[in-house]
Image (cartoon, rainbow, N blue to C red; front, top):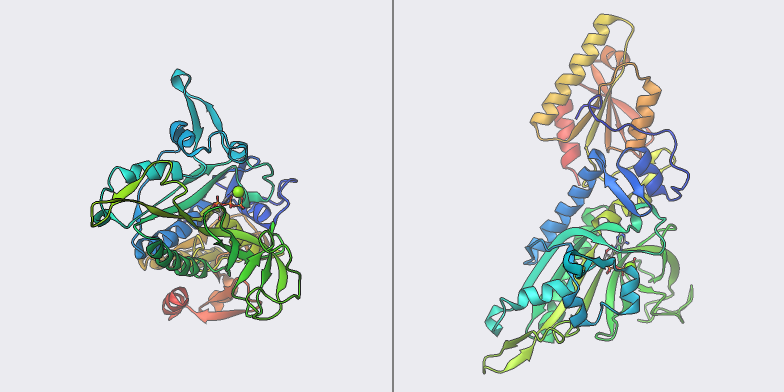
Length: 427
Ligand code: ATP
Ligand code: MG
């Protein structure tokens, strides 16, 4: 993409109410635009990041047998009345409920257990039809009380929700562990550290697991084990204290703030029972279906990555989710022939990279100072910045700088493509 054609522009200042780092940099960099508190548009740069995260999630869900579907977001109240959540005060608080045509009660989807259970029920009759793993990636709507942490807590936000259906509790447990491993891979691939964290399992299961990314900007409090690879949510372990022995006896824990980026839950028969979803076992006897649900918030992950990877100049995108891998900056020169050489060199490089399938943005704007271009590159945070200028061309080179590293160096134009290719493919 050429920056001269990008319809968004970077902003000098963030809106006053953008308190968190993710809101500040994502808005200033032209990744998202706030429509109202908790509701955002994804602009070309931000949409590329969101899509990359969704694709990582999709790959990992497909790898554990997930079949992707898309359920409606506009929902009838009927199944919610069946499950008892339509009038549950806690649920009512977040649900957007209103009247549709014919004065019917409807709501906007804020989670989909009530939709998926009767849907899968239509196709599951015997033990031979199970297990079933289905997921969707869709916007959810929740009337969150506070929505001031940028895209971390939206009133409309993106979610991947996976649901599994099993014949036995053992089979559910096994799949649950598989999802836990898949979630580890998702967050590692997205470039963040998210710890499996014990949380309350509700009325149906002793524990569930959240994936918590430790950061000072988090809303949750967790106690992290000594190895730094497991944690307990303060909500379920209220007696735990900073420095106290971990519940599993593995050593003292450390209290930290964290953001929940995903969670996995054994629902067992919480929803299959009210919907009377059963299957026939080998003896022809009806048995209850066991269910699990597993969520990840791709839009919250976008914000979490920014919280984890930024400095005082802007975002530092991990390669796996960066909107573009390479940011070419061509500078202007007084001499017209030099100026032409800068432009053709930058353009050739841009075209070669595109031919190689490498995501590249080229700051080809004229009449913009070098300082402004560098500030934009830092703010936007692509992993590799390549400068072509009079100075670099005098050495038949480009200036190579990795975002997040202090030093730049000159790399000869000859062999530059190979070096970029290997940089981009390195993990
Ligand atoms: P929280 O405790 O943060 O409100 P939750 O327990 O309500 O989260 P779930 O209903 O399990 O979350 O949703 C699954 C995932 O969706 C969460 O782990 C999180 O990544 C994401 N998510 C939930 N609520 C929001 C929101 N308001 N904005 C953005 N992402 C969200
Ligand atoms: Mg919530």
